[in-house]
Structure formats: structure tokens, C-alpha cells
Image 1 (cartoon, helix red, strand yellow):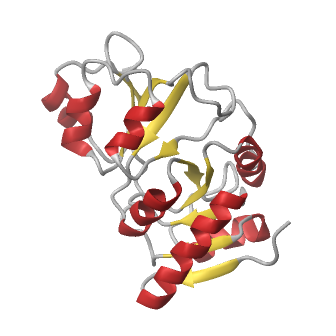
Image 2 (spheres, helix red, strand yellow; image 1 turned 30 degrees about the vertical axis):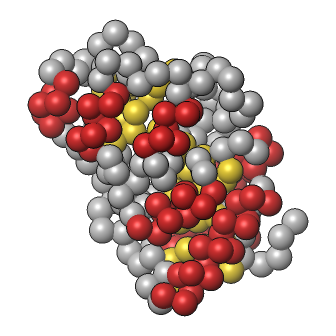
Amino acid sequence: MHAVATTFDCTDLEQRAEGLTEAAAAVRRGDLVVLPTDTVYGIGADAFTPAAVTALLEAKGRGRDMPPPVLVGTVRAAGALVEDLGPYGQDLIDAFWPGPLTLVCKANRALSWDLGDTKGTVAIRMPLHPVALDLLKETGPMAVSSANRSGAPAAVTAAEAEAQLGDSVSVYLDGGKTTDNTPSTILDLTTAVPRLLRRGAIPVEKLRGIIGYVATDD
């Protein structure tokens, strides 16, 4: 088990560089890290280390029935994780990535990973945050969920995340207060008609402007 968590102030260029190096090393070791995103702070683990994903769910107090989404640093990385993006995925990525749109796709069956009870799907997103993107380009795809205990408010600062998650996390990357704590919009592309799973930062009207029809529950 790692020692006490370390926090790096990513508004300081030296600390940012050191923090990214330490965080990438922690992820490769199978430890957990907290990182700023364009929505709220996230708690992340290597998507391909099942024990790390389990530790992430445990840190949040979540079960396997709530698998974490996967954040990517490049569109190419996203393409490698899914069977296909369907007829709409690429247009949505071109329009809204990096940004607060999570796409649920059929997962690439060749991948050996275990995110929980995903029923063969994966939720993918490329966040619009320089610290997150720099880390993801170093680590590859990460399982990332909001940095809070399940049921508690999402953390908008690294300190709020640390108050909830403590030493279950190795490295905290502090990028200051997040500017918009609206969660990402989640769109399911595994059905014939794209279906809205969660309203979020990108309004449905904007999605419809790109792909036409989006099914919603109302």
C-alpha cells in the first residue's frame, strides 16, 4: 500500500510537471489518482488493471453494478476501446470532443479488462482539461468516476476530493476550482436510435443539431 497521499499544485508549472510524472507512475502501479476535468474532479485508475478499478469502486463506496466511464486523451484511443462508433459516433466526437459528452458504445471484445458489470458496453469521454489530457496521453485510457463517496456531492476542488477520499488515493492533482460542475451529457449509441441517458452540459437540442433524432425518456 502507498504512503500518505501527495498533492501537487498544477497552477505551478514545476509542480504540474512533477505531479503529472508522479500521477502517471501511480496509475501504472495500479494506484488511484485524483485529477481535475472540465466538469468536476475525477478519481481515476488504469482501465486495464482490474484490481485498480475494484479499488476505485471501493474508494467511492460503489458496487460493480455501477461501472466507471473511461476517459481518453485522444480520439484514436477511444476508437481502440469500442467495437464501432455506429453511424453517429464520429460526427458527435468531431462536434463535441474534447468536451462534456460521454458516449456509451459496445466495448471491443478483444480487450482484457474488467470495469464491473458493463453488459458489454463502455462509456467513453475525452475531457476538455489540459491537466487531464496531459495525464491521459501518458497513461492511456483511465477508468474515471467523480471524486466523491457515492451519494455525496461531487468535488469541485482537490481539497473537497481529499476530504472524502483521503489516503485511498496516491496523488491529487490540484488544478484549482473546476469552472463548471454540470456533469457530462451521456448518450447511448448501442441502440438503433441514440438514447439520452443523462442530461448534462451539452443540451439535447445541440445533439439533435448534429445527428437528428435523439430518444429521451420524457
